[in-house]
Length: 125
Image (cartoon, rainbow, N blue to C red):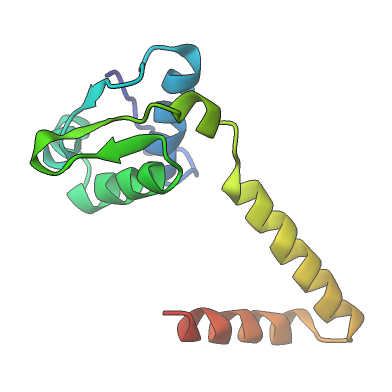
């Protein structure tokens, strides 16, 4: 698996990893059942923190692009190609944009909205 990380890119490293795996699934370079490197192995190959790779794998598993099978390894999910078409980030942006527009319609300032967002995020943990 050929992954290239651009440290000068504004895109977070874990997002670069997620995007590249999804691109390779869509093109067929990574087929169903393909065995991915372990988190430690990929982190060493890319020269990045293991937590960064673990975060990317967690997102890919949440999106059913990959499936972890314990000690047997991590593999490309059988429905990965179809699941690559679902963009949860875009859905999240739409929901958040609508919420912000509603708060602005109430007359809340940008600063108040940021404070509310921060407070809600802290409570959600």
